[in-house]
Each structure stands twice: as C-alpha cells, then as structure tokens.
Image (cartoon, rainbow, N blue to C red):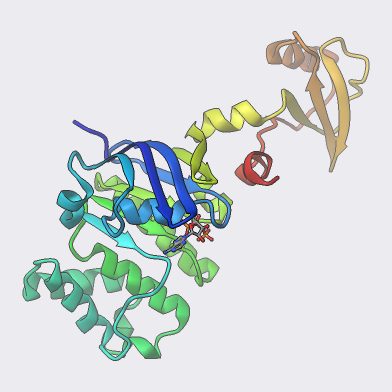
Length: 295
Ligand code: ATP
C-alpha cells in the first residue's frame, strides 16, 4: 500500500517568492506525524497542496495512493484561519459542512452530536458560531474537519487559542483518531505537544525538509552523551567522565570519548555512593528545533 503522503521534489512559488523548494516527504498510514518549521518556512503551503487547495508547480505529490484531487473526499483539513459560518448554529453548521461532503443529514446530525459531546461543546450546539469564544470556535472547527470521517486528517495549528484543559481534550482526540487507524499530520509551534503526540516528524526550513525521522532517533542524535545523576557524585576524576556540570540537586556527567554508558553505570554502582536518580540526557524538541532552524 502506498504511504498516506508521498512528496518528491515538490515545488511551489508565488510569483517571485519560493514557498516550497524541492520538498521530499513521506508520511506512513496510521501514524501521527509532526510537521514543524519557523514562520514562513512553507508549512501551510505544503499542507494546502496535500489538501488540494493549491497545486504544486512541479514534483510528485501522492495522497492516500491517489492524486491530491482524487484523495480530497478522504482528507480532512483544519486550516489556520477560521472558516465557519458565524450566523449559523454550531450543530447546523457542522451538519451543513458534512452534507457538502455527501454525508446524509441524519448521519451528519448523529456524528455532530457525538463530536460536540467528545469536545465538550454539547451545551453550545444551538448557539450561533459568533457567540462562541475563540477557543470554542477552534474546537467547533476541529469538529467540522472530522464530520466526513477522513482517513487522513491535517491539523494546521490545532491548539491555537485553547486553554490547557482544551489542549488536553484535543490532544486525546488526536490520539484517538490514530487509534482508529487514521493518519494525522500535526503542524504546531507547541513543541512539547508535538513531542507527546508524534512518533515521527519533519522540520521544514525555507521550503525544504532539513530534518526528518523518528522522534526518539532525532533526540538521540542531537543529545550529548551525558547522564544526569542525583545527588551529585564526586565524579570529576573518573576515567569515563570527560566533564561535569552542576544541575539542580545533582551533576551532569559527560562521557569521555570512547567510554560507554555501561562503563559509567558500573563505575557509579561500584562507587558505593547513594544515588537516587540516573537519567540519560535527552534534548527537548524545542532545543533541537532552535539548533536546526533557529539561526
Ligand atoms: P507560519 O508558521 O507563519 O504560518 P508557514 O511555514 O505556514 O508559516 P507559508 O504560509 O507556507 O509558511 O508561507 C511560505 C512563504 O510563502 C512565505 O514567504 C509566505 O509569505 C509565502 N506565501 C504563502 N502564501 C502566499 C500567497 N498566497 N501569496 C504570496 N506569497 C505567499
């Protein structure tokens, strides 16, 4: 089976502005994939091409094994900008959008009811969209994205305007979507959320993918060969340790070149020191992002 998304050498320019410049991307079916990059990197342009709202100038773009146009009925796209009808009631609006996608009114009403319940919006079902706060409108828009039960869901900034409780509601919803076998692409600036959701990711910078792969492998690749040890052992002269840095309540021990982590752990055990915590240092995604595209 072809992957959910396959892009090879995709290019898109707006007159003289090159937004996407030879982009290669592969998103497997059923995964939650993070799509990251600084402002203006080309994320939204890429997502809009996948959702068949823009056409690439050149390159290969396949979505769910078809052209983006043919795949469109099976794709849900949450755009960055809001697009609900402000004067319609929330439920009415969701049903209307689903009917545009060919869902019967009866099925749409049932799905809308379930989604509004799931998103904690059931008590606002009859309220006109314009009366909802920004965060609640965001949740209604997420519901609208899912009304036709898409196989591939593309979320451009799904967490914007949400309080921490609602962030968690949406985070769980995304996990459930993947649990149902759907593919989810999440484009978000909240690195810790991406980290908690995505198994694989890609970083785009100036229209090109500059980093892609498994999150755990990326974190291992960028992290120093070091362990945090609490409380601080007296390790300055151990042959396995190249340098020591103080951290709150303990020390960060950087391995000397050629020393292995098991050498260090054996040394720690043999030292007889009472150690309460040992953890391998893993850079947060935010630090990796800053290192890769921050400059
Ligand atoms: P952000 O995180 O700020 O939303 P982004 O990564 O989504 O950024 P894009 O919106 O894809 O970035 O924009 C990439 C580049 O293409 C930018 O230089 C932007 O100004 C330009 N661009 C995007 N859409 C258009 C358009 N319709 N007309 C002209 N230029 C555009």
